[in-house]
Image 1 (cartoon, rainbow, N blue to C red):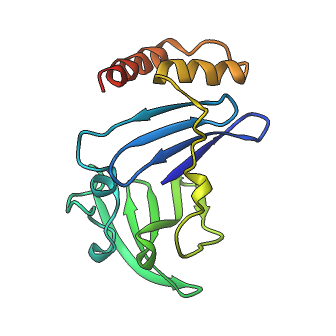
Image 2: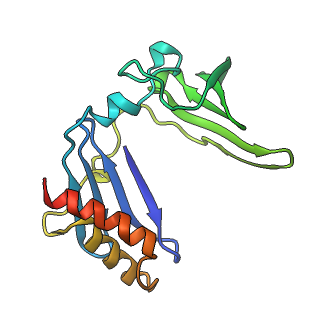
Length: 177
């Protein structure tokens, strides 16, 4: 899985890559740095990825995907894409059954204060390999140095104290790998 974080000027600044074996890499494309984590636990894909064979109500590891109570409130199909809708707390979440439980819609909130997301395109097949490419010249660094360099590149100043403490903990774990 790859997720990106936008820079205030609209450019994507980091890519968070989670590999099926549980390893993670955060790549700072604008700063030429990366930080990599080796997983020593159950791969993320098994612990967190919803299982379409279980109507997306359980993970591939057979456990609940969240500690919050969930209910299957129905199945449907839009443009040939079969989905299941799950209610959790004040939100509903729809997952594509034929695409590995990819989330295709969500709606959360209370009363008139709601927000939602709706998938506008789903392309079957393997993702573009460039999403996972990490240039070999990018400097490997610990999470704290990475976060500090990212904030400096965006002219955001130092990390907030609580964030710096947590990131320092991650950096200690990183150094023990």
